[in-house]
Length: 101
Image 1 (cartoon, helix red, strand yellow):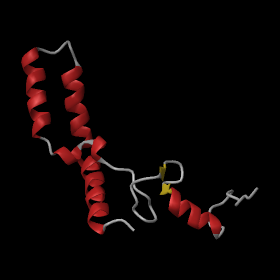
Image 2 (cartoon, rainbow, N blue to C red):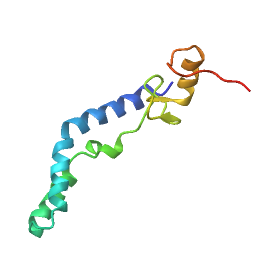
Image 3 (tube, rainbow, N blue to C red):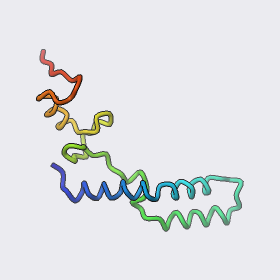
Image 4 (cartoon, rainbow, N blue to C red):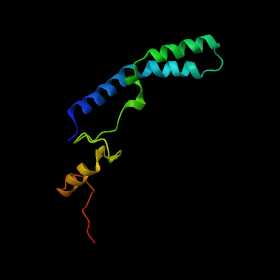
């Protein structure tokens, strides 16, 4: 089980991205628009740098929905390899069959 504080920090980042993501996207579009004057683009850069760091999408860490584990994460199932194995062993994951050879 992951530390509760790490999971909560990641959840806080997700909420902040949802809240401020549109504003960051608009500023980034202004910065990339070469038809705008350089001063306006520079002002957008300054405003973007004033935004909180945790409002950036790249700061979100993929974590297991079951245990909060950050490593060995499967995107499709949104869980770690260990949680997947445990749930598959008891038949809780549809379509997954334990094999042996």
